[in-house]
Structures are given as C-alpha cells and as structure tokens.
Length: 194
Image (tube, rainbow, N blue to C red; front, top):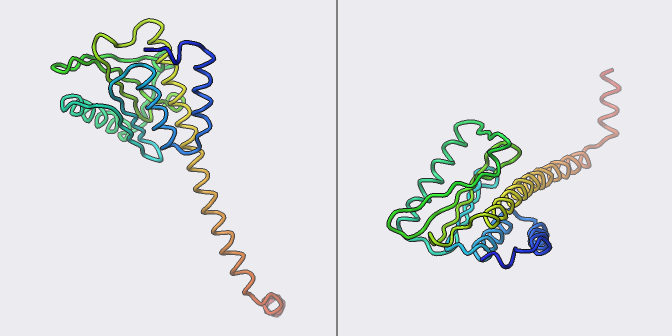
C-alpha cells in the first residue's frame, strides 16, 4: 500500500515533483492522484475554499460516499465562510477516521491549513480493512500537511501573479496616456497659472 512512499528519499522526490507545479489546480490534481495510488485509497477529494476555489475529486464514489462527502465539504465551507477558523498547533496534524455505513469503506479527513487558519480539506476513502494505521498513517498525515501548505503557497503565488498582471496593465495604460499629452503645453499652462 505504501510501497511508493516507504523510503524518505522517494517521499522527498514526490514532493519535489509536486513543487514543480505552478498552478494550484494542477498541484491539487496530481497530489490527489498520488495520495490515492500510493496509499491505496479508492477515492479522494481535495477541497480548497481560499482563492482560487478548488474542488478536485478522483476515484470511485458510491452514492452514499458522495452524499457524505458533499455534507462534509458543505460543513467545512460554511465554517470557513462564517469567519476565521483557527486550529491549535497540536491539532494541525490530526486525521479523523470514520466508517461509512453500508459501503464497506472508511474515510480519513484532514483539514488544509494556512498557518493555523483552515482553508479547506482533504478526504480519502479506503476499504475498511486497508485504512492506514501506525507509521503509514503518520506518513499520510505528514504528506497531507505538506500538500496543504504547498497548495496555500501556490494559491498566494497565483493571486500575486494576477495582481501584478493587473498592475502591469494599469502601468501600460498610464504610459499610453502620458505619451499622448503635449507636455510642453501642459508646462506652459502650469507656468501661466502659477
């Protein structure tokens, strides 16, 4: 189940591959693919409420699992939108597990944090007998924390990039406007008024 991430070198290589991504959507999709395949999940969802808003789902969702996931993500979104949601440092690495009745599956939840602020969640479904425990669960928790942090950083990067593009446009417009002025006439008029 954890064969691809069993060694710390492979773990770091996976993270470096993810860091090469520059778009939050691509990072989210590739991270979720890695989580599902390397940890033996049957389905997963990465839900990010901050900008840009993301919802990536992969795998096989039964109707009961999809309903449960929708309720979970709606609850997370409502809580985040109602005001700052902060976690204590000791809570940040926690994974919650819950069996989903009638499906033979259990889910693991983790919140995505930007510092101590909750910005989204990661949800993974496993066959009940294959849910990670012990060291596998610790590795999964670490991986989820790193993916969440990278997603927050890329989100901020994308936002800054968007704002810089807007500022560049304003600068170009100002330059265009300034070049159409007859500066000598403006200077003469200003001197006459003074």
